[in-house]
Amino acid sequence: MGQKTHHLTGPGEAVIVKMTLLLLLFMRLMTPGKYLAPALLVAALATAASAMHPASPIPPAANRPMTPVILDPGHGGEDKGAVVRGLMEKDIALVFAKKLKARLARNADLPVVLTRDSDRYVTLDERLIDSVDMSGSIFVSLHLNQVKGKKSAGAIVYSYGPEKLRLWRKRQHPSVPPMPAPPRGQAGDSERLARTFSRALRGDGFRAESSKSDYYVLKNPAAPSVLIELGYLNNPDEAAKLSDSAYQDRMVDSLAKAIEEYATLRTLRTSVATAPKAVTNRPKAGGLLLP
Image 1: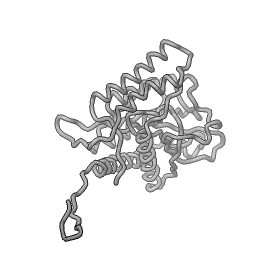
Image 2 (image 1 turned 45 degrees about the horizontal axis):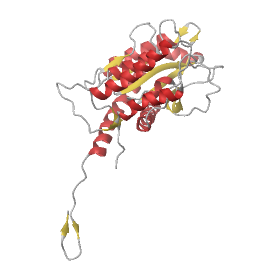
Image 3 (image 1 turned 90 degrees about the vertical axis):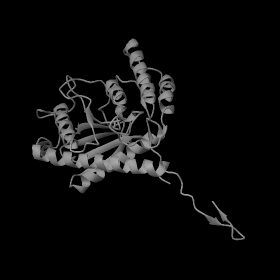
Image 4 (image 1 turned 45 degrees about the vertical axis):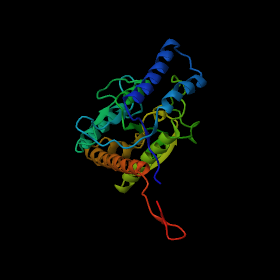
């Protein structure tokens, strides 16, 4: 038996999730500088979680377009992200996102939407709300890493889960209230998506690993979500590669192949999970056949 995929099955469910997130955003605006009670957040998103249930695959049709892949270039505007020797995370993330969108355009079954297509600031709430509003099929947030030292290298693909180095990592958003974990089925799909990315990158010669974190955007209740740290800007050699157009194209091709592979496997997994069981005739004592 294949694993069932949890996703939104229609505009009604998408509206529920979107309205829930909008309610949270409104309440935050009404209480600036204060955190919402975690219990309130859990209760609010319980409605969104209950709107998601195993659903049969919906075949594409001319009047029913495929739901888009959401690419989320991190940071933007006044939020520069990591800045090392003049290289800014927000700029490189946007370049990768635009190239990945262009690469995926070869596949008519994979429409793509960017959460930002220019140097502007988009809040974390808006990124999730936009994803739900557009009925995103998967959510991929692109970032660059920065740590002390110059030896760290390689990509890290995060899906939701407890992070062992949470106390060590300083790149947090203290102004963002806590969010409850995504539904269990969604978290499982996110982990499979992360592994697909890391496997595709390693297969093309890149250093890559999958890991867990509780980043805000990984708590998307409506779609499998990953956050990819494409490399380390503090590593001079890797920073030079990440700024090189040919290297970017190679890495983008790997990312695109991972998305295409996951999209295919997810469809197959859903089909297997929801396919009717075959009827077999079983012999019974006395020679009678049972359905």
